[in-house]
Length: 165
Image (tube, rainbow, N blue to C red; front, side, top):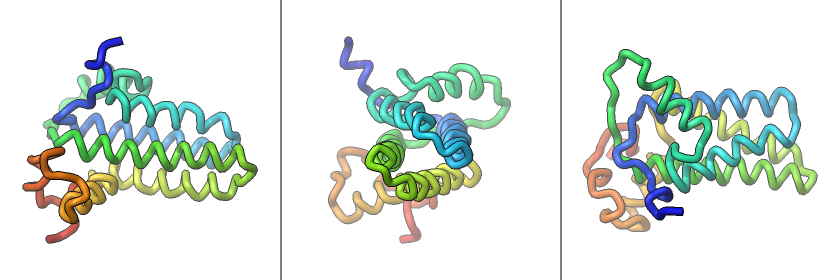
């Protein structure tokens, strides 16, 4: 298996990112309705796949980037990849945490984590507000993430990546 497989796109098509977030909203809402642990498996796997490889191993990512996005007649905007990967990592923590909580007999914790995930994914999909990107940018400002990780991020001042200066 090539190391190229384990790369994340940079830049990222924001249209695709927002559509993937919409898919996460749907998956999260399905879990909250049916309340069955196995619904968390594809959600968690999707985040893991996207953290490791971007859309390459993610069924939702593949569907969005190969089928949906190319058919849209909209102006696509491209944004830096590292904050989006960080946001996917946070999604993995929330979905994986929900799966683990369920396994430990704590379904209320699972519901709370998925409600938070659905809220964040809704902000991304509907309003292009990426909470993970905002956190990423703040961590850069505090010096916890070096600017070399995402030089172009250090210059972005929009609400997609940063809180007001």
